[in-house]
Length: 77
Image (cartoon, rainbow, N blue to C red; front, side, top):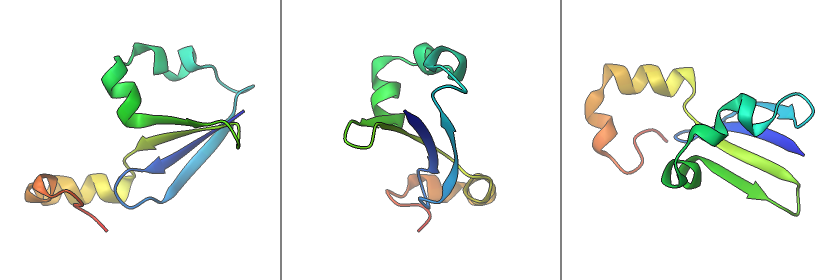
């Protein structure tokens, strides 16, 4: 199984891990409540891949500088 990280805003690829490198416990997935887990993590069986939504440095910086963007449904495109 692979674990792929991508930005929730701009959809850019941020990196990946193999399941041999990290377990859900080590990655902190088990600390999430069901709503957080559903919002951030998606497993695709046909690819045997877990996709994790996070925020890249560019989007984090843009949102910090322009806090009004957080009110938008698609703040950064």
